[in-house]
Length: 342
Image: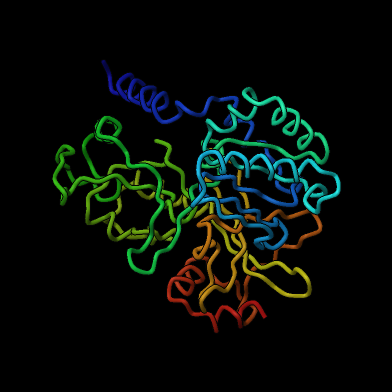
């Protein structure tokens, strides 16, 4: 088997495994979603329901289901959808993109309950709302990541299993994609030098598909961390690594938009092979963030119409580089960012 055949075989195996819950049709469906058609995004989970406006990313509805029994949970979910289908409620007029965190629930909703089936069709017909699965959402928009003051980031994507890791190990010819160092095989050792990098960081909206995985050494992974705008001019970075890092930078750009007579920091972003979207930054606990760290852990996703003017962020008539904006966000330099926006 030649090198091309080997790589094709590995990619085929990875494609089958990592997309097992997302068919090509489902991927095309979520990729075709135009967020300008929706007023809100609703996240229906096992423990809670969140609804966010796509205008400024504001939380407009929340219910906690955590302490409820299975029977109470189903009853409250059903009541929630009944209210949505009721033409007299505030949410009926909202065109909503519904994200069902547990894919099985959506399947059951469509086939096991006649009333829910009727409600489902009512909601989708009244105002053009749409339901998508967790797998679809994760592919295009990434994962929820809730910040915990004691333990740090939690709620990450599932871990990559050893079989997928070994496929990646072979695909990258046993070498770190950034420094070209020869790496040992994956093992159960906690401090293994061989690691998998999510090129688009999970924290920044990255997904868990094999197209977002790269074989790296621990040192390079620690240097890259969750940064989007890495310096690719270093001679130590090999050609393939530069290609990935440059592609990452092409997918992410900062702008400002004006809404309700105020400028907001927004970011255009997207996963590899998925259409881009925008998130908006809010001040939470004296820090700018585009993710609801305190509640759901989801990003503040917004829709931009043709009337929304994206403006570059400038200082002294010069456009501020994306890497500088990212750096100041990491530092938590709220005052400086306020000056840029105003």
